[in-house]
Figure 1 (cartoon, rainbow, N blue to C red):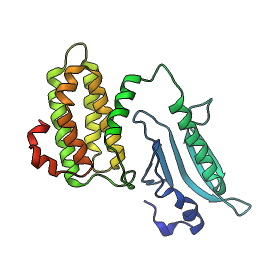
Figure 2 (figure 1 turned 30 degrees about the vertical axis):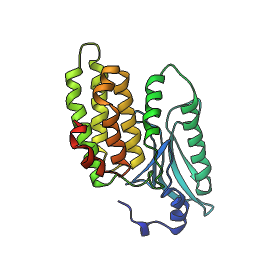
Figure 3 (figure 1 turned 120 degrees about the vertical axis):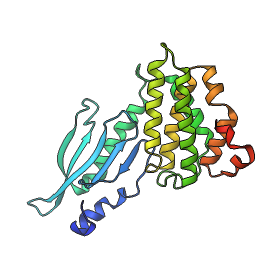
Figure 4 (figure 1 turned 90 degrees about the vertical axis):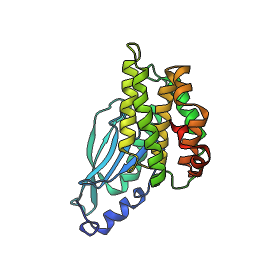
Length: 241
């Protein structure tokens, strides 16, 4: 793994604006063998913006080896090329613009029902934390949410039939992914994924909403994530069961 003082100061300064950069559509990961690694927030997406290496050109200026996808509106392939370090920000803005356009375009591949439910549940959390894009949930919140997800995953099996087996399997996969990332993803990331899990459950019908998403059960999770764990003591942990 690279060390800070292995790199020229000019390289570190050019990457500095990305250190704490966060957004609704992307996530900045630990670069590991790269210099910068930003990925699309959508779980199924392979879109990314990566700076792999740097070099000093013959004119004395530094360049970055950029690797990003999509390449443009016409191509979803990777686009790998050397760019001057002064072009890092413009190139990144171009990539973000492509993500925005993908999100805003309507298509037959979108599920308006899940999208609507996801927005409804996400809004209910009323996130006001300034560091929600950066910091994870605290330990008590993680354990509370993990308990809820474990219980939901187990009981979903009881509601599986020939008609919904694929949908239930997909929900369980989403739950597993969420549980595996409770300790290493930001609070906002977790809440977005939880909202989508709830949305997919709600789409299965009124019976699923009554069983898994009653207001009392949702309220315990929402308040717990927002920090009011004391509600469990007042209302009883059985509300999660």
